Image 1 (tube, helix red, strand yellow):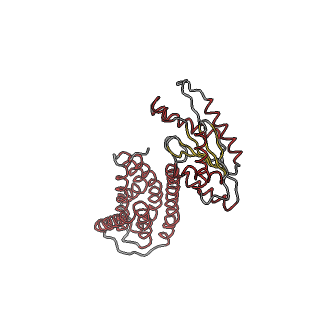
Image 2: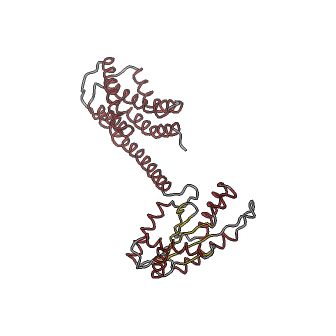
Image 3: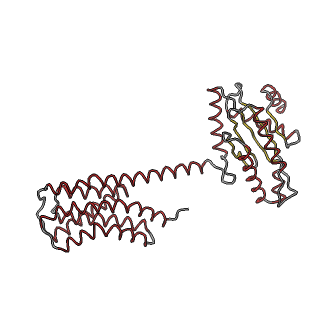
Length: 359
């Protein structure tokens, strides 16, 4: 699990590349604008330190902070303050100023939305005012050809760096979304589809059968006397039994078969493009495997399964009716003594038996 500190460090690492590229090539845009005024040596030292030293310092500050995310947001404000300072030193020279400040504004919007953009803009204004008081440059000087060429790398390369970071974030978000979708559809104990996800899948497969005349089968699987297992051996053993059955399902079924935990000790399987006889054969092998399995830690523990299986039929009006036929077959398997696979009866027999039960 990612902690807030790890997430903050990840955020700082993502910002390290665009900051390094932006300040590195931004140095040339500022230098080209200040060069005609022959600034003192300390200004050149400050420009070099800001352009090539500050990105590494900013990352170290975030890395060593107990709250890297907060520290990195603060670093972005410092970036804007520095950009405003150099804009003021240039006398708000149109091309380099717009290039530098707009790139920083884009960075702030990408990193923190409107709020960070607003705070960054205020920091730029503050930096420009301080710088103007120090240098008192001529405002809006003429844009030379040197300045034009010096700004081109910033206009071309920096947006590409921002785009790369945004792409990486989008990829990560896509992976996280897929992981959450899988988690929301997965039973936490067995790793199979949970009840809701499996029922949704059943509806989709039923619609396929209706539209494409496919042959599907569906099964409900119940662990015999599971309550007795829980009462005798405890719920931890009961959970292990459920896990073992889910493993047996995964090993016995085909890749195209879709297994889920229906609830409690009941499991469910969709068999695409599988006749009732084929599904019954697959489930019979599963039943024998579970029944013959010996538990080394609990040699007296014997498991058996009662299974009902039903094929899709044109008489079925919806997925619930299809599943109900499998449920009735499961009821027959239990009534006949358990530990068996029982195919569903023809629909007419099912309706007659239901009527007798209601009567």
